[in-house]
Length: 204
Ligand code: MN
Image (cartoon, rainbow, N blue to C red; front, side, top):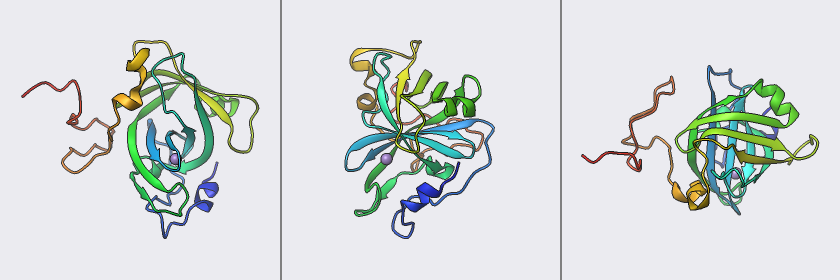
């Protein structure tokens, strides 16, 4: 459990990404998803655990269809402060391209999260802006030093669907970052005021 691999890959004089540090565990465990338009577009899925963000690269992004088993390549831990990061990583730097905060919220693990993570089998609930309900992250094969292949799978529940409606990355491409004009989110994690793009917003 360390951020050395994260630090080694980056030049913090050049990239706007945070250097970060190990954090104290929060009362609730956060999760973040970033849309990263790098050499290849992908989604970075990050779960807070033991003071860092456990991270997976999902080339296609999450799907709300339980039949879609999405490849999730396990990568280096990121600092907790990376979670809300959005910005442009300059040309020539690691991960050069634009990063958009695509989703954020909290995750609740079924059973002990650290044990599930070591075992390569996490079952959890997401309570985010775009993703909700039950999900699983399952490692294919044995534990490896790096670039393990996992699968991210939506569980069958009230939040799962199929067909075009399952394509959540296409349906909701917008950022969930607290941009200027939005009500800042409180420390307790209470949701900020409804965002302009919210479909449930009632007419004035
Ligand atoms: Mn990335």
